[in-house]
Amino acid sequence: MAFGKTADTATRGLMRPLALLACVLALGLLAGRGAAVLTGPGAPASIPPAEAALADILTPIAGPGLARVSVAPNAEGGRTVLILLDEAAAPRLTELQRIAPVAAGILPDRGDKLVIETVAFAGGLPGRPDLAAWIELAALAGLVLLSGALAVFAGRAQPAPVPAQILSSPQPADRPREAPRPLRAVPASADAAAADIARRDPARAAAVVRGWMTSRDDTP
Image (cartoon, rainbow, N blue to C red; front, side, top):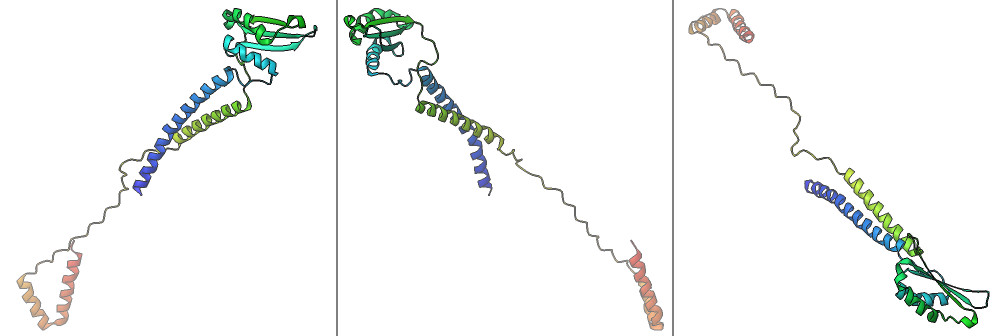
């Protein structure tokens, strides 16, 4: 029984450090994945094939998430290709001006136009996380909350330390037994007188013996 209680106490003592470790690991994963999902390019939106093909060509030149492409028909019957370039990719503007017309298939005679603008992209959410990314972040957040709650309740559930030795309540002491009273020595002359009285008057002898016994019982 004592071994079982000791093992149970040791298990409870390990629950709090393990729960804290799991909480720290889950919090680190949540921070890392949150930064990657919320500040990364995110899942690509549904875009026309022409824009997707042009974006695939421009991304290695401008950099991931540093260029946006839009292709729309114009009033001249051609297409207007708009490329928004982040200021971080401004040093690559010359290469983009040379490559973009060829990659987009621009034909001025057909009324096609190419517009490249350099702007400062707003920080925050350059892309939009998809449903799977939100589910992953929610699962990590739930793991952080669960492990944190387990660590808190494991600390509260630990029993108070029990003293190594518990003193028993004092028991009433046994009443000492009285020592037997010593018998009083009877002189020899008294024995002779008692024998003489017993021969002559037995009733008186019996009264004398009762008197001796009574006096002995009354003696402390």
